[in-house]
Length: 139
Ligand code: HEC
Ligand code: HEC
Image 1 (cartoon, rainbow, N blue to C red):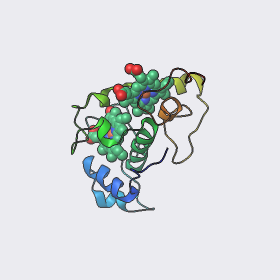
Image 2: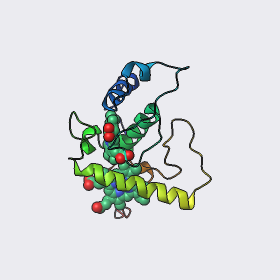
Image 3: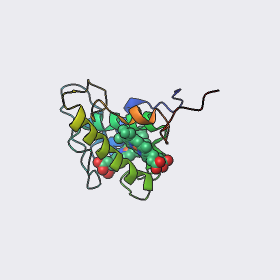
Image 4: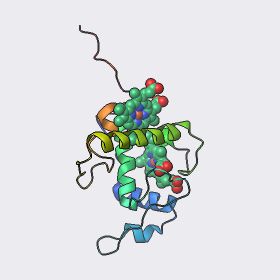
C-alpha cells in the first residue's frame, strides 16, 4: 500500500505527547531520558506503553486498517469516545491480544513492530477497513 499519509515521526510524537499531557519537549528529547508512559483515563487497553511505543502502535493501526487518525478519532480530541470506530478498535485490540496470548505466546515483537504480537491488525485487514473472508471469484 502506498502511504501518502506518512507522518513525520517527530511531529507526531510531539502531538501525541501533547494529547497525552506529557510535556512535548521531554518526549521529543532523545536517548538518556526515560520516555514517559502513555497514561490517560481513556487509555483502557493499551496500557504500559511508552509514548513512542504508543505512537508507533497508532501508526500500525493506520497502516493496518487503512484509516487515518480521524478514522477512529474525533478531530482535535484523541481522548474523545464520540467516534464509534474507536470502541470497535478497542475490541479488536483485545481480540488480537487474546489470539496472540493463546496461539503465539512465545513471539517477542522486535523493536518498532506492533507490541500486540505475531498477529497484528495488518494480518487480517491488510490495509483495508473491511477484511476479506474469501478470495475474489476466479476470472
Ligand atoms: C483503528 C483505530 C485507530 C486509529 C486509526 C488511530 N487510533 Fe488512536 N486510539 C485508538 C484507540 C482504540 C485508542 C484507545 C486505546 C485504549 O483504550 O487503550 C486510541 C488512543 C489514542 C490516544 C490517547 C488518547 C487519550 O488520551 O485517551 C492518542 C493520543 C491517539 N490515539 C493518537 C492517534 C494518532 C496520532 C493516530 C494517527 C497516527 C491514531 N491515534 C490513529 C484507535 C485508533
Ligand atoms: C482476526 C482478524 C482480525 C484482526 C487481527 C483485526 N481485525 Fe479488525 N476486523 C476484523 C473483521 C472480520 C472486521 C469486520 C467486522 C464486520 O464485518 O462487521 C473488522 C472490523 C474492524 C473495524 C471496523 C471497520 C469499519 O469500517 O466499520 C475496525 C475499526 C477494526 N477492525 C480495527 C482493527 C484494529 C485496530 C486491529 C488491530 C488492533 C484489528 N482490527 C485487528 C478482523 C480482524
